Image (cartoon, rainbow, N blue to C red; front, side, top):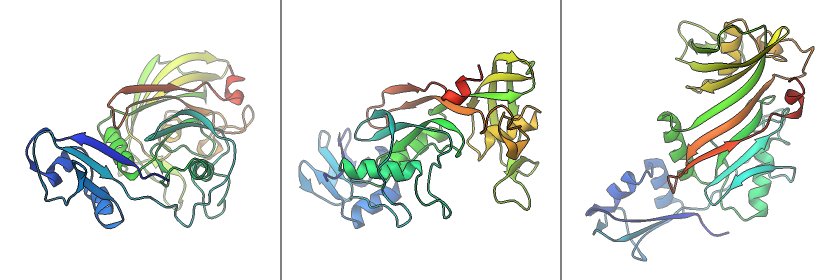
Length: 291
């Protein structure tokens, strides 16, 4: 397994430490390079973070190999890959599959299958999931192949440069062509799973566009402006239009056996090249049948 590495050219004089910070390498990631088997090279020679750089110096950061935690067992299984390179893996998660393993379900998650994929193809990293989906939500998931890449993606999310859009089917006929749902979300008392709109919750905002109405239901498109747990599900229930199949938040199971929510679009800047990238995913079969 070849270690993951990045290269850049110094554009100004100064300490290597400052150049690494400007390049987006976090203090935590740099500590792992220094103390867990990574290397810092300038013009091919190993140096420390105190090395003085000259304009034009070639800097190489060799990241330490990462190992899976004890709670993540690698498995072979079906994996729908939308895009893959040395830094990123974009996949489609089917409904009914956990994104990460749990104490009660340690196997069969997307993370288990991706760990097996990494092991099979010699990727020297554990997986870093940048965009999680609930078990019964289907669609696009973004995975970083290195701690540094995960950090850069997290910065994109904070700066709202990473966008996710969803399609959903909800109870009731939505009357507004467009709406912005702004309502704080917090954990529901006496529950470790449920969330609710509450005054002391964290700021949350969801954009909603109507695609079409049907008898007693609506097909809508959604964009997350924040990333709270169960945000879409809670916000839709709050405005009186719970997701079809979402029995946790007031949706009925008579038409579809899981929450009718699918991540259809993912937009991001490639963390290394800066190229703007867009990925799309067709609705899962059980949701497409609702149309």
